[in-house]
Length: 106
Image 1: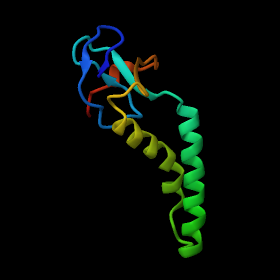
Image 2: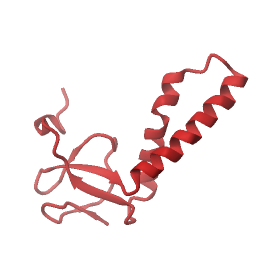
Image 3: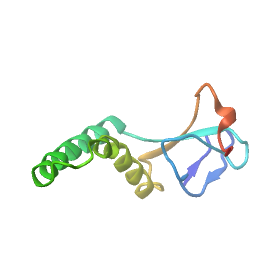
Image 4: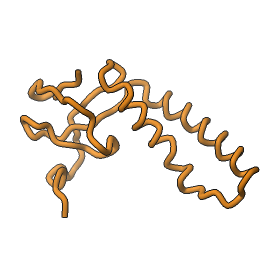
């Protein structure tokens, strides 16, 4: 189970968008989800993405390249959701400069 590093409150489920910070339900600190060995996972996902892009380019040259450029990060988010209850996922305090806009919709 993942916990808030500031107050120890259990974070039951991962947030919808793992690339963005989210608020702790108890202390309202900004938190961010990261994978341990993130660089290794992103490198592997980049290799998979490039291989997939080369294969699909041969079949259909009109495939959108911008979707392929975001694919490693989407795969990282999916892996973090699958591994949510393991020690490979960690929840850290977010130190971004503008945490006041987190959780507000406009």
